[in-house]
Length: 332
Image 1 (cartoon, rainbow, N blue to C red):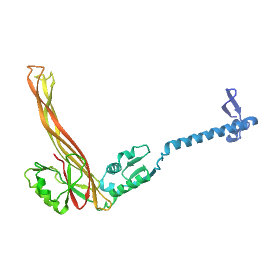
Image 2: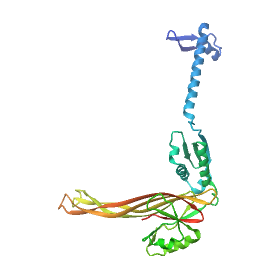
Image 3: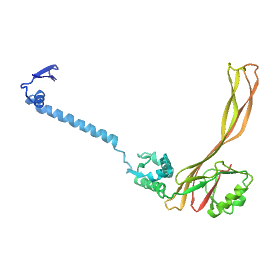
């Protein structure tokens, strides 16, 4: 004889039900245990159906709330294959594609009132935007992935010249281009004249090239040229009773130099080059010195220095024919 503990809805007290037959099937037994009088059977079944319906409705609403993207401007979701470019450019290069798309299309287009998304990994680039924007994104992706078997390579050199008189010899072959930063100038030179111009500049006595020398940039991949030097100076004094004099000078290091990033990208027809140039220049103008008295011991006077540094940040974008060489003057 088996016993089952149930909970009675009306009396709110335990009820014991005894199975009538030992060989009765468990399913039949439980059906009897949960059976209700005929008068209320329809009501209970209706309650069960309503509860089950509410569960389905809640599940559907939650899926719609979390899975459906807003398409107020007719946005569509597309995925682009960037694996050919990644195999050539290397790990982490997907960010170059994303940054170029944002710069080319405008950052404000991705942070407006309509939902938009742009992300990339080592295999694909995912984009959620309007059909017009998808067309622009597709063209940019093609510029990164086309002709990866025989990519374009660009030689970049950074040289410093002590005088602006070099333009007297080069002005005949240079054609000016517009720039956005005050003091920055740009020109294009025919390829057949660029080698001669470079040799003239390097032969001058007031010319100094960055120690890294020429650097090659692949299509769509930024190249960085940097030259930095450090200078150590006495920044302050610190009191230390454990020392014989009770104090010691506090040294610091400041850095000055130049860093140039260039990211070139060839057009789909192979006739034009777009390039983003970013330049960071930190230069120590002078070290201002001041004498302070040490408040311990025999109170000696110590000279400390305060560096005065000028910082320049330049961001430019250029487009020129592949048959010509770009020359940029930073005006410093």
